[in-house]
Image 1: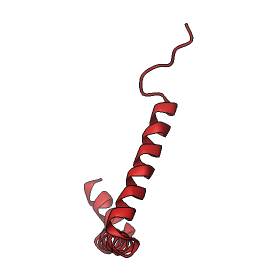
Image 2 (image 1 turned 30 degrees about the horizontal axis):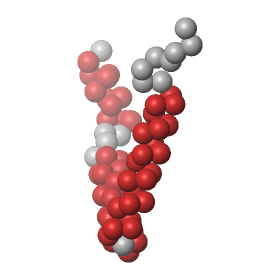
Image 3 (image 1 turned 180 degrees about the vertical axis):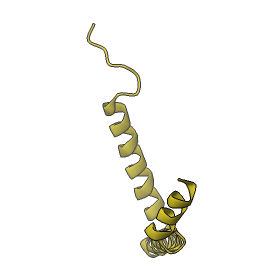
Length: 71
């Protein structure tokens, strides 16, 4: 039989095309400026999360000191 399994890559590609069409409809309905503001907000939020994760990550020296204490 020449049938594909469910969830194969062409199905994922089809859903990506549907998502792109949904985005185009959303931009047409709300306006390009509104969508750019939403995207800018999401980029700022992602940058804030990344900055917070890098600021509060324990340093390599602190992790090494904990490893030495446990040994």
